[in-house]
Length: 444
Ligand code: 4AD
Ligand code: MG
Image (tube, rainbow, N blue to C red; front, side):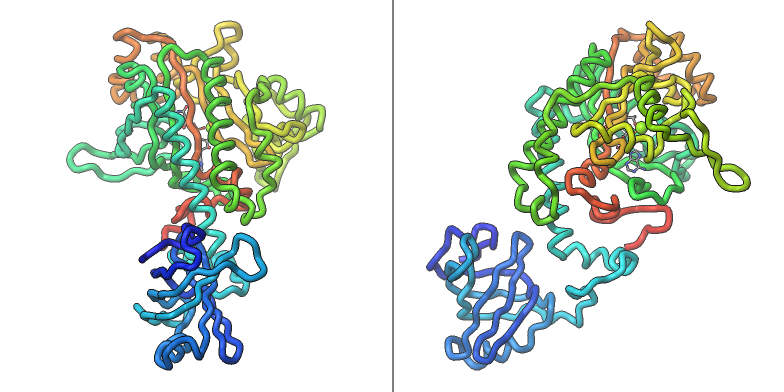
């Protein structure tokens, strides 16, 4: 019977078939120890020269790394290691002998591995990350479903900008002029919330940012819930419930993968609500106390500005300094309205700040979520669109949401790859998605 390696414990003393690839092979005289992988795990086989036909013995000798094969054998418990199983091989069918495999257990440079990403994905570390990513996405979908949200897919071709006009990718769209690749499904999600109450989008989004940082890709996946009648506090409550659920469920279901990746799970176990809530003003105080300057690029290098000026956005060193004293995600709320998107509602108690919230992951992983309460007043929204020099005609449909039964509403956007990077403790976001797109990389 064909079984998968992750279910092998149920087949001790039984004869099974495994379909997969050769991961590695060692031999010692009359024994060979091939390691097979099938996508769900790796199992060591034992081939005894006097236990198989001469042809099978010779065929094993021909196998190269990543050759594809179908093997038959009896499952046994490893004589010394608890919870480890072996396959006492009785038969082998070679499906395809692999050419000399470019990725070997020795160290390769990241550029080489990125060029070979289509093969690099077969390595145990990359497979572990992909399984964690899968669990994250599944837990997001389950949380949203269980909590009454309707999945509401937003288009990717759009005629307008959501997050500022400087990071748009454009393409020709038949006779209709330029279309842009969506930076965010939010504006469409808002129309969904006015129809269905609580919705979320989940799909690829695009930013033409020429940044080569460890946290930026040009094509990333975003999950964006949008809720009618939620204010900024309701939004933050949802973020806490949601993130606690996802992190705890991933620890529960993907412990083995996370341990394999060397993740310190005690740190993730602390990610349970409530999360600290810090206003932007308080965050600036923290930066000033720690004497973290704003760094501004100038013609002849860099300029350090002290104390950190109110109104500026935070960069990586600021985010790190803010989260340093906490062991949970930190929700920074009430941002200078000038620094934020046109759709954010001003705080009625202080119009200099917008009702926005950014969630900063612990351990210096930076912003994983950006959200806000939305401007629900038609006249204020018209002003904002003018201030931001956005083409009014493209926002007419969006303004209709304020003309026909406008209600307070809020939402947020979670960057999937940022979340994967944090949960898996990845140095670089390029490992968090099967095929990362960066300013200098579109292949493979
Ligand atoms: O903060 P952002 O720009 O917010 C929005 O797009 C809102 N429309 C969301 C909403 O309220 N519905 O992006 C949200 C998140 C960021 O916090 C970050 O996690 C991720 O998207 N993100 C990126 N991830 C990887 N590479 C990039 N270049 C990213 N830009 C944003
Ligand atoms: Mg943001």
